[in-house]
Length: 360
Image (cartoon, rainbow, N blue to C red; front, side, top):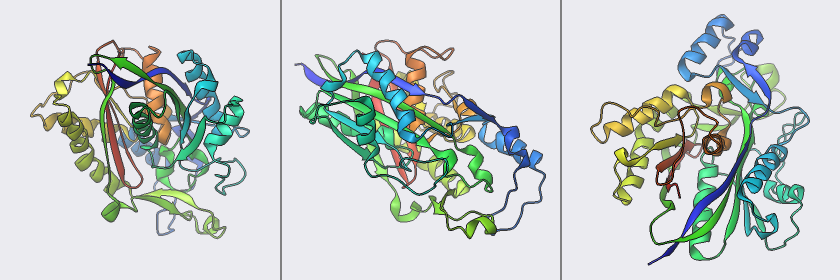
């Protein structure tokens, strides 16, 4: 008996052209969380940072760009790739974390919603193309895809645009070493319902929120530089060590739970598209996932990575990765019909989610 499944019919992304290499931070003044200036030479700080995260460069938006501008480029590319009429979109779901981030003003701007601004910039006239935002930390785009899947499988919608974009460079404390991890970008996908006698597209998903104990692993706070802190501007802060341990303990189990629901084994997975948060952490998560199946050797090329040159662009990392691979722009990483892939993310909340997807 045939069923309706949610499939990606077009993807798009926008990687800002402004490259910021690690050398850029060698002139910065870094402080610790107590406000004490760090006396370690910046060259050593930067070298240690790259060793821990694998990040050697990242991309920043131009000063005249705002978050919805980045999203517009990614969304238009996804629409073009799908070949749909944009007026046929039933929903536009926009995942972000900081609203319309400006170069000269840190105040959060979320009215109107970024989804509404994007709909306006796309020139969509259809009033029944419903536009709204979702804030779910770095897993926001994956969660938006999960919501879209429910709409499609219920018959509520046929075509949905799901976008993830953030400009983290403007909420990063320039005096906090952790801020070197952050980047800017946007990714998007068109999702459509497709009738099939066999499972295709999104086969299953699951999510969790560990707010009771881990709610403050990522939060907003004043600059570590006390002079800058007097301005009372809020910057993104994270408890990197505890976050790392939380992710290692919980992400592999969450992914396995999703596979178990479908009676799938990790050996049946072709690719794991994991949120590009920290290169070493992602490697450790994958190794722990394989160990849950008593497998010591991780399958070569199963996990494509972009973090070394794109950094952590939050909600944009997974859709950007999906787009790059779909367009065959990453060596040794192709997607073929029948492949099972995992898309998973972890971030502020703390939230974790994962999707199992079969390439049509």
